[in-house]
Length: 480
Ligand SMILES: [Zn+2]
Image 1 (cartoon, rainbow, N blue to C red):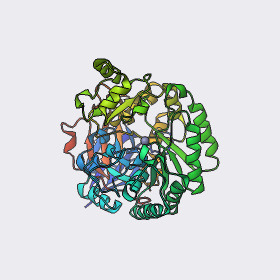
Image 2: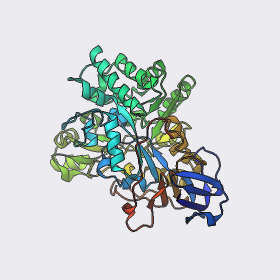
Image 3: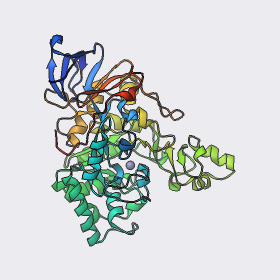
Image 4: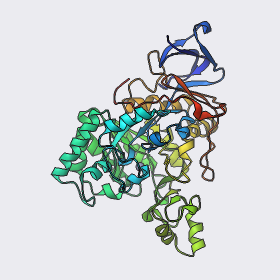
């Protein structure tokens, strides 16, 4: 017997960018059965959606949730924002196919305990056995491929090593990976040359994947770095996704005028998109070269000084009577938020038609950047409703239909009969983020009900939001 839930009288925003309209939506088991006027007598359960938006579940295209979906499968930071699918493996960093207890930088962003999957298929099995609250789809990281096949990262891969990396990537694509990610900004991938990247990109292309890249630099040399990525993607015939697109550093502020113009120009020759998080601070591992004494920096964690998490680097330096660079050295290894962007740039990227939303949240940090808990409600509340930067339908499109199309996630990301019932119901008047740099782990407001593969998985008014049965699964490229 099938199980039916009627979302009655909601404002349907279907994820295609099309204008909202009023209708009922009927969920039957794991699937959307109808969007129409539905006789309530036919449904076992009715959810009154009057005044609420019924949208596809949000797809967080840029995450580092690879290990956390297994270790904290309730995934409260994400499902409470209305996210029903996370794309893992970004910035060159993925668990598979690395086996180690001492991961190289920046793989430690995923913690150190879960590097135990020789193949993506084994990781996928672990996800399905754990059954997290949300769906998981995976990119394979170039730095991880290096870690699995090379003894030394300060140079480009040899022909032999390239062969072993491409073999690993081919297996992962067979196992359903969405594509290849790189993070050649990071030291252990920086020495990769074009033949290395091109060979890997070609393997991902043959399998119908994508190329998501944290480019070599987002500072002064950003245009050249973007052109390098575009060349690799074009020469391997691979759709390109610029990760967390931004212009870093005060000297670079305002230059999204140039970078977005370059994207528009490149897009006439090749498929391109980008993701963004809606904040003026970035966050990554603590790095001395990012400490310029000008921008504000907040420590998100430090192994030798865990008590410094949440403090400003300038205050720590003053307290210790040393320079910020010296304070940084003492705090290593650790993580930080860097206030390195400018608001106009953030808004310009958010408003660009090719931009998707990705949190880039770092769930292993002691005091994570608030983007981990607040990204999606912040776009819908602050940027769409309060500032009017985006129509609500466009904001939803950037979180649903656009990413599903870019990453080839089949029928996810749009509402239509026969599509999987990943659905987020939210209050458009109330939705807002509450996570701040001072209090980063705060639930958002206004996400009313979230369904994952047809199962009610989160409700705002629930006393214990983690008590719902978890119903996420591993998603393979192209499957529906
Ligand atoms: Zn990155």
